[in-house]
Image 1: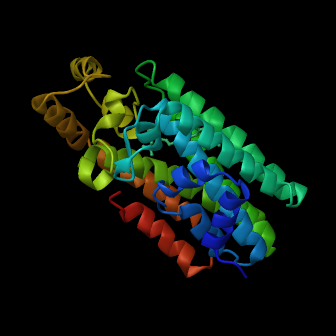
Image 2: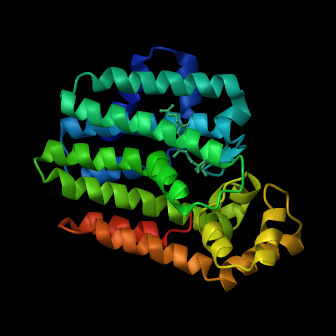
Length: 293
Ligand code: FPP
Ligand code: MG
């Protein structure tokens, strides 16, 4: 049985283009959460292929996302758009995800539909993310629906498809992936506020500057007086000086917005475990909640 890395490498080699292989080699490998989840449900030749397909889709979505977000770094290194320019980053994304779809055609229609539908959903989520960053959104439901689509849909598809390959109960593993995905994004949003840029591998307190009113901000806003709400709004989409950043962080702490967001993620994570027997899948949930990057 070929290893995950070998299969991924083979997919890139199949593309038969040195330039693609060279740029691809400059992408740091990341957490590989989706493959890890699949392998803790089932590890065989098919699931390794499926995990490589999903990882390629994930990598290409980040290549596009970094262009959309004008991100200069990813995983503590220069982003591909920063090093090679937007055009190359977009095209590399297109090449990788079309290769993923090519490989997906070898799978059962049911699995192919689950994965391809998730890619439409994640793209719609990204569009909603862009749209929600155009104004100061105060609707929590809009935010939660967007992060489900943007982040959780592909994770949900990974565990759902893994369960089908393993012959397990589909709904249990689907719910696991969905809840883990939403919790993962909420933790990501919290870390943007609590961690420094070195740990994150990208600038800290960046979401609000980029127009993203994430869960901690939504909670703090909801719990604040009119004057505080207005002050918070006045800082939206701006580069903040030290005093202003400190004010924002204090507000998020004093209103318990960080704590409430964390508890929300924790509740989702606990619900994710209903019916899950694999200790490793339980461990992954804990590591998502406790991570600092
Ligand atoms: C990261 O969000 C982005 C995503 C999870 C999804 C991006 C999806 C697309 C660009 C749709 C296109 C899809 C394909 C397959 C090409 P973030 O910006 O909140 O997280 P970050 O801080 O890691 O950048
Ligand atoms: Mg981004």
